[in-house]
Length: 544
Image (cartoon, rainbow, N blue to C red):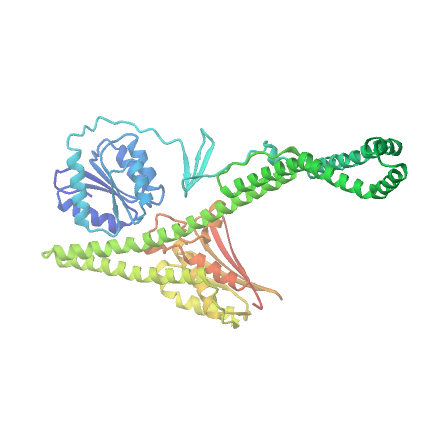
C-alpha cells in the first residue's frame, strides 16, 4: 500500500488488519508512503528489501511470530531510523522496556490517529539529516528474559522482577547432610556439664581430704585456748554439719563451673542459631555457616530457606500471571476500541467521504464494537469461573440429546465453513451434571473445531460410557498440533494460531473456561493431535 506523496516511507506492522489499514489511511492522507505488514517475518523482509527505503516504523508489540520488542531490537542491529511502538500495554515497565530495546516513542491504544500522525512528523523532523548508508549495530543484550525472570549467563545471576533470586550451592556445608550432628552437640554439652559437676565433686573431695580432727583440736586449744572437752564438742558439731557444708560447697563450685564452662558454649551456639534464623527471615539470600555440631540444624535451615525462596518465587509468578491477565484484558479490549475510535474519527473528519467508503468504515466500527461487547462477556465469564466457586445446578442430563441440539444450533457456521458433522453417540447417554454449563463446554469445543478445521472437512463427535464415566470426543481435521503446545491450549488467552486476530480467533478463553467447568464437575479435558487430526476428549463422572 503506498500513497502519492513524497514525505517518506513508513513501515506499519500490526496483526490487526483494520488498525494497520487505518494508520495507513491517515499517514497516506498526510503525504507518506506506507508499507503494511501483519507479522514480524514480513516486516523483516521489508526492512531487508533494498528496493524499499524505510524512514520510520510503527510496530505493534504483540505480534504473532515475534515479540515487537525483539523485532525492534533486530531492526536496531542494522538501522537507525525512528521506531514507534504501538500497543495496548500501558504499564510503565513495558514502556521502559520498549525504549531500552531501541524504540523512540510509545503510543498506547486506543489512540487518536491524528496524534500518531503528529508523532510520526515529530520523529522524522529529528532525523531529517539521517544518512541511510550509516547502519550502526547495537550489541545484543547478553541476558535471557521471560516474564520477569532474567538470567545472566556470564555472572550466573538470576533475578525475578528485578530482585535477586539466590541459587543454593549444593557444595556448601549447610546443604550437605552429615548424620549425627545433633548427637554431637548433645555429647559436647554433656561433657561440659560433666566438667562442671566434676569441679563440684573435686571441691567436696578436697574439703574431705583437708579434714583432720587432731589438727583442729590442737589449733583450738593452742590458738583459741579452748579446753579439751570444748574442742571435742566443737569437732563433733562440725562432723554433724559436714554433709550440709559439702552440699553448699558442691553447689557453689558447680554454679561457678557452669558459668565458666557451660554457659559461654550454650550462649555461643544459640547466638549463632539466632543469627541464622534472622538471616533466614531477612530474605537477602545470605546464610552464615553454623558450627559443626549444628549441621542438622543448618540442613533444616537451608531447606527452609529453599522453601521460602520457592514460595516467594511462586508468589511473584502468581503476581506476574495476574499482571499478564490484566495486560491481555487491556490488549484485547483496547485493540477493537482503537478501531472503533479510529474509524469513527475518520468518519467525523472526512465529511465528503464517498458513500460506499463511509458504509464500509461504519461497518468496521460496528463490527469492532460488537466484538468489544462479546469480549467483555467473555472476560466476565473467565473472572467468574476463576475467582469463585460457581455452584453447579446439577440434574439428569442426556448428553446425546444435548450434542444433537448443539449441532443443529451450529448449522449456519458449519454451512459457511463447508463442514459436516458425523455423530457416533449412543441413543441415550445420561449423567448427572449442570446442563447449562455443560452446554458451554461443548459449544466452546465446537467453535474451536470449526475455526481450526479445514474447509469442507468432517467433524466427528463420539460418545462412550461405562458404569463410572462418560467420554465425549470431538475430532477435526486440520494442522497437527505440536506436543509442546497441547498443554498450553487450555491457558487463558492462548491462541494456537497467533496470527489470528481477536475478531476471528476469539480471546483465547474458550478452552480455559471449558476446562474449569469440566473440573468443577469432577471430570477432565485433554487434547491429542496426530496426522492432522486433533481430538478433544471430555471425561465426566456419571454421577457428579
